[in-house]
Image 1 (tube, rainbow, N blue to C red):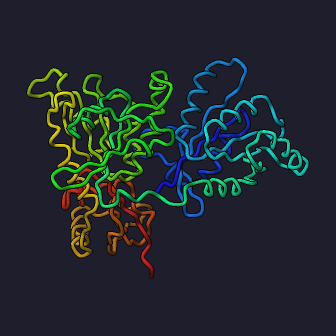
Image 2 (image 1 turned 90 degrees about the horizontal axis):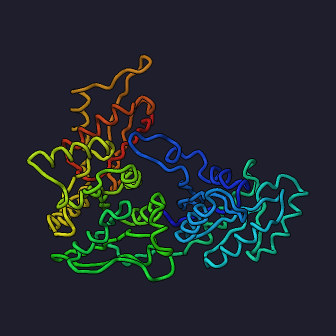
Image 3 (image 1 turned 120 degrees about the vertical axis):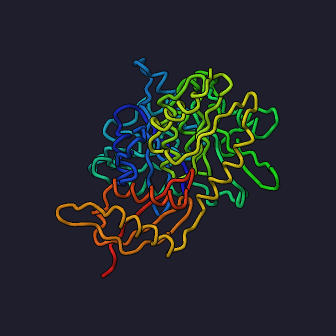
Length: 436
């Protein structure tokens, strides 16, 4: 469970990215390449004291008239707006600068908790010089060295302490789904159509996105919460043009959802940003439904739907399990198919398979296609067990976990889908060595 979002800000060359890399560490979930998933390097996930949180690395802000400085400042302001806590990085070697004072005023106006990290403090002499940063009015400075890892634990402690003590629980027992996609694909129109009422889901309330856009409703005796991610609060259309920062809003919504609707614009077709945003839903292990909106604007013949389906499957290889719905929010065409599909995907994400049935399917799969050999060794699967749901997670007890090749893992996943469907939900397969 993600406990919050942290933005790292500061002027250029103070070591923000070094600290960012230290915080995310060597976690494979961050650094590994997953086929088909587009990543943005400024986002990461960290864990400290059993709590997970997102980290945003931002560009440097400075007063001097430098190329792209206004764009960088806007991006940083969006990151600050979406964050629950902010790590403000300054340089102990260079001391307090006018740029630091300017950024400090920006942060004070945000009203967010700020952790002041004085970087590049590699010796006692520099450690004694950190006190000048009290002048920024942001509380106690923490001496750190991103290069050597000194003080990073203290910063992480402060981050955890800044998060709210309790998480919201008012939506327990309700099916939560979010609507994500790049700007202007029709997310709000789709939400309006699902709710069957004309309203614009936007926020006029100061604070984080998650406190402003949840809409509970009931349909045919079932309780739902829709989380709309349309638009970027504040500053108008200039912010809407920074498409990659719509990911910030989407990540927060994805974490709190059971099912994610990935909306594609039928007028403009698939864009790289669509794959970027959808990748986060896949990685988070949520149920996923692809919604091809504005179907009324597409020139169609009897082959159009098949052609577009094939294109979606090609562009979103990692979402081969996700159902595809063709709808028009404007005309409310096929809108009635969305909630039943959400229910079905949610049910599959919570499905448990009896251990004996699971092992029978996997045994048949091995007999049909034995694992390949590697360096003269062959994988042996002794037995398997489902250990979690949402997403369904299976542990295989084997002779040597490293012998489970990615391709054979995909083969086993396909066999599980053939036997139990699991439509719309990711599957996790973990190999562990059987205790002798």
